[in-house]
Image 1: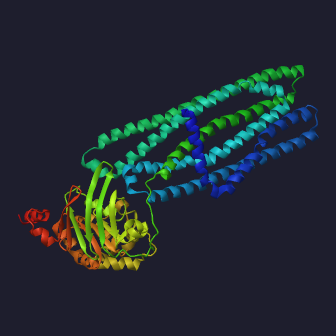
Image 2 (image 1 turned 30 degrees about the vertical axis):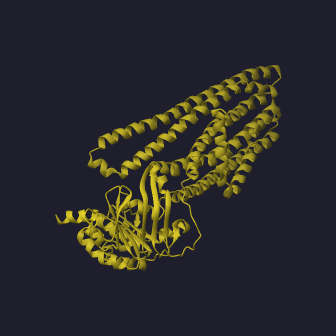
Image 3 (image 1 turned 60 degrees about the vertical axis):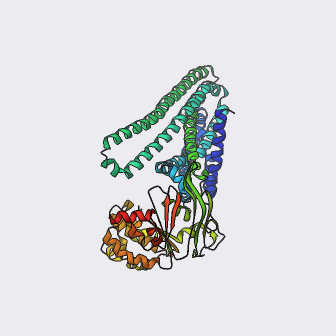
Length: 584
């Protein structure tokens, strides 16, 4: 099979799959199709009526009959204008509605992809596909498919009326048609490859901008503005060149079409004038055929452009469908009721995990955390501490082994319920652009403002929130940059607690809070941890002093496990060395 055949099949399959988004709006689609059929013959009527007016009325000085045909001519023009307006409204409304549904579907799908997908896919790529590619795909439904059908029907209508009016003049007009078809084909192929390059470059640019605007602090800290600007100029130049290539093909194609059209017109007038003199062609036919030619070449010009619009949309559509095709979708289970609590022991049994197949991160991890107890996990950076909490709430899936909560494999719990019952406080706090209340409730209608206030008071955070302009309606900037690190950390505690989780995970959460703030909330944390299973990941001894069980990780393996009292007295243990270092 040739590459061309493969592309055709791919394009057909892409279009077929995209049509499932048309089904909810098929009424608009059918109405637009009906208008395309109805307006097709109208484009051929005005030249034909011109022929009739000249031959049957003007040449015979029949002013009364001429008036009737002229009124009919105006009526056709008015009807054509109304139909084109309605057709444009319907096709654009269809396109916007379909893209609205697709954008919602794409974002909903992204929300349920595994974290491994986001680890491998730059943010700029997803942004481009969700915004730029979908906007390009809009042209398939608003300017491409139905418009192509309308142009083809108009072309057929004009050809039929031309043949009915004069077969000889029609043949003369079609002599240059093969050259026009060849030019259209070459133009189509060149623009397709050019557009594919444009999509690649715009993705590269979006990714670069997303990363460097988010990481502007690092750029400025390392005085890398000049090098970053140089790199952006290179990407921008490549993107501009890709666009210029497409513009060049358009700049060549349309003048070529005009030249072919002018040659056809000149040939027709030269031959037609001789026909008028010899009596084989009427004056009306000679007057009407330039109008026929204009209406014949216009759909051909538009078809070449619209076919490219369709191809551009299909390329963009294929990129969007790649998101839906991604196999890394979270698996769910509804074996248990959503209100099933997670009270019970947490058990890891011979768990192995790797982010990449050939690089194990956790190796044969086994431990049991009794219900209501606190497990502290310590270890050097990269030892696998955070990976454990990534597995317990199924942000990532283990490679082998078992993770049980209340004697039930975590895969058997409904995924949404599992995550809602496990509260997590991370060191790197992410806050969204919105109010404090929206960030703490995560837009959950079951989390009321009084409930948020109650949790904030228990944690000693209510006072600082009340001091902010607007209190719980204080507008947080993107990523919470208008709050201090400590304030963001305190809010993350409240956010975890408002959902009243059965299991609480603190991932080095207090390391971003100063000692005074940490002391303020320590008693509240102890109260909230009462009768609640919890896991604490930290380096500092003050963070883990109330732990019932301590687990020491090293290179993804459990090096030591036991109570703090036991490990602190065991010479050579990791905790023993930490305490010796603190005393020294």
